[in-house]
Amino acid sequence: MIRKILSNVKEYKKYALLSPIFVVMEVAMDIAIPFLMGQIVDTGIYTSSKENIIHLGIYLFICVFIALVTGILSGSFATKSSAGLAKNLRHEMFEKIQSFAFEDIDSFSTGSLVTRLTTDVQNIQVAFQMSIRLAFRSPLMLIFSFIMSFSLHPKLALVFLTIFPILGIGIMFIIVKVFPIFNRVFRTMDRLNTVVSENLLGIRVVKSFVKEDHETRKFKTVSTSLYKNYVKAGKLTALSDPLMQASIYFVVLLLGWFGAKYIVVDHSLKTGQLLSLVTYAYQIQISLMMISMLIIQMTVARTSGVRIVEVLNRETSLDENLSGVTDIRDGSIEFKDVCFSYSKKADKLALKNINLKINPGDNVGIIGSTGSSKSTLVSLIPRLYDVFSGSVEVGGRDVRDYNLISLRDDVAVVLQKNQLFSGTVIENLRWGNENATLEEVIEAAKIAQADDFITQVPEGYDRRVERGGTNFSGGQKQRLCIARALLKKPKILVLDDSTSALDNTTERLIVNNLNEKLPDLTRITISQRIKSISDCDYIIVLDKGEINGIGTHEELIDSNDIYREIAISQDKEADFDEAE
Image (cartoon, rainbow, N blue to C red; front, side, top):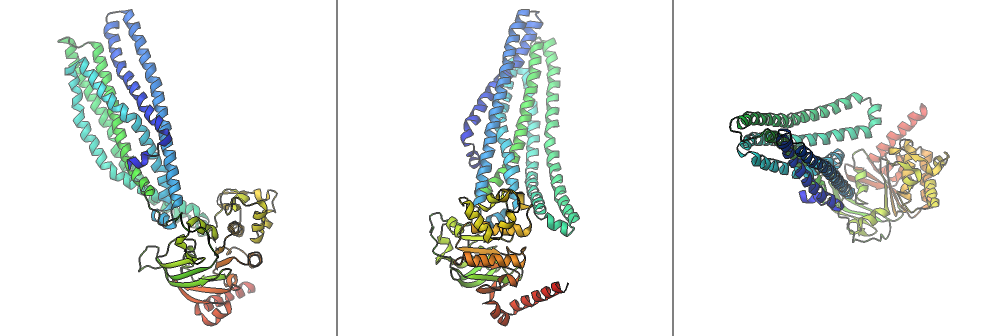
């Protein structure tokens, strides 16, 4: 795990190496300062030697100046290297997530991935920054403070040894108790991010159903759980500071008690030396506090590191087959004994025994009740998921034989949830083909009946698109997404309920444009409305993941009960609307 994460230091390695070098220099100066202070007292102030005070004062000033400069440099280099590590780690994680199939993303959750990309990476950054400074500074400060203390007065320096058993037991107790709590903290943070992201994405639904109170209660439940876990962890980690303070006060008390004896009774200790010993005692305290902070942060970082490496080591469930076939012959599609399960379990199949052949240029409709796996069926064509058993062929070849990028270039899917990105209209449309000319963009927009509303404003195709396309209506977003898909110039176009927000006239104009301008394009239209698919070459009726019927509109009206019931119910709705 550590090697995997530290491999991202890369070009910032020189800063990570320079920082400890300056830390060593800083520690050397910090160790010299208490000794010089004691010497000034003993050989300057007590002897009234102005020359010694000036001479030692200059050395003291030089040490302070060097400590200041080296401290600034070591901190700067530590910041650069840790920030660089975090940047590279985020990039690697984001690239990995981009390679994930839907199945891989489903196995984590959006909230969890956001937490891992942000909070967990930040924890690693803080831990790395602390480690390349404190992991060198604290032990060196601790060791050399002891050495200097023993060189000043070996017997009195033994007082420092009394604090180690107390601190060692205390810190180990804190670490053992706090580690599982931090695990719970991060899991709860995942849940909190998921709740927030779901709420923001579905805010219109929340408001339309007046579910603000329900969402607030749900958020408060998770937030309170996070609060309680943080408080538990905070209470335990907070024990380290008073433990350190109490220990050092105890040491200073012993130094004062025995130091006075050595000064007054046997004259083996000078006042300046006692001052140096007290200063070294505080340096030892600071070192131990920094070590305990580092250990606690490393405990947090260990949890975050495990979660980050889970993402980086995740084997993508879909093989992109980069050496696969890149040329797709035509837009023919064939499903052969296809079964599919999201859970990869034979007893939980979403699709069962699908056998279907679609010829190039066919215009196919798919209809069925909610949950009949219509979207699941078409998602197998561009390999958004792989089949559980059987095979899906495009252009006469199994889709798994194709280079995944080439396959998806020739299969354009306009999903139910229309997503636009912040930028301009033309930037969004060129997602389909970044090299498309303005003429090609306009032509695609005209086919999708989007050109009219785009050119109604002065900015035209340079009009700003707000995040999520919130400044466009549902129907406008659907038309922009269809135009974007057409710019790919695919052999197969899948419209997954992507005209649901359009009126019948606009939808009919789009269909006519597709028939006239792109007659060789294989089209699959999923819809809940029979009017949207009644003119298709043939229609597939799905029921509970199985094909219930195939035929033209007229044939299915006569022969298929499910299709007939849908048609009758929609006719009644239409009659009712007209009556109103």
